[in-house]
Image 1 (cartoon, rainbow, N blue to C red):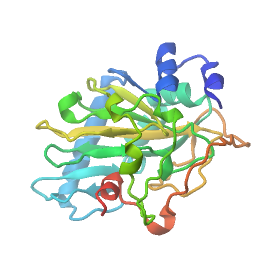
Image 2: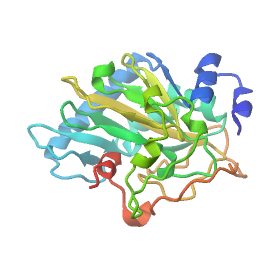
Image 3: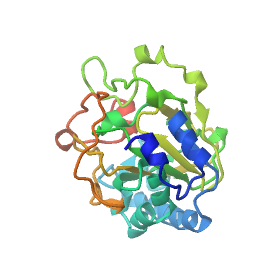
Length: 294
C-alpha cells in the first residue's frame, strides 16, 4: 500500500497529525501512549529474564550478552525473539495498542515480522552507530516499521534513539565493509554526505511509543546515566510486503497476520536494496556484535 492508501483508512490509535508526521519524517514518538498496565507487565517479564541471565555464561538463542556479563553483574544487550520467550510478549505484540498503531502506519492488513528487547547499559560504551534497518531484512516494499516502547523514562542522558528526518526518502546505503563483511552500519564515506546534526532524539516517559520506518537513518549515543535503558521493539509490515531473504532473528510468529487478511499479490517497490548475508547459513548475533566487528 502507498502512504496515501494507508492514510485513507480511519486512524485506530494515532492522531491524524501523528500519522502524517511519520510519513513526512520517517518516524514519530508519542509520549506515554502505551498503558501503564502493559509497561508494568513487560517490566516484570524483563526483570525476570535479566535475573535468569545470571545463570547464562555465553550468548545463546535467547540472550545476546555483553563482554562484562557475569552472575554478579548481568550485561544482557538483547533478549532475542521475545515472542518465543513468554506468551505475554506475543500477547502484547499481537493484541495491544501496538497492533492498532501498526495498522495506522502500514495499512489494515498487518503482518508480524520480529521482536526483541534491547538494553543499553550505563558505562558500557554501547553507542549504536548510524544505520538503516531494511538492509538486514529486505522486503518487496518499504512498509516495515519498528515500534518500540520505553519501559522507563528516557531523557537525553540515557542515549535515546535519534532519527534523521526525511532520510527514509533518501538513499539506502551498504552496511558492509570494502571486503563485503556485514558491519550493520553506514560507512564513513557515506556518512560525510548525511546531515547527522539534524537528528532528533526521541525522549519520553515510560510508555512512550516510538515508530521508525525501515529506511530511516537512526542511531543512539552512549547511556551516561546510572540506570539501564530497556526498549522493547516489534517489527510489522503490510501484508503485501514479502521478505526475500531469511530474517536475521526469526520467530515462530514471523509472517503471521495479526490484523486483517493475508495478501495474495506482493506490492513491489522499484527502489533497490542490496542483499544482506544469508542469515540462515551465516547466523546473526546482534547489531552490537556486527558494529563492534565481532
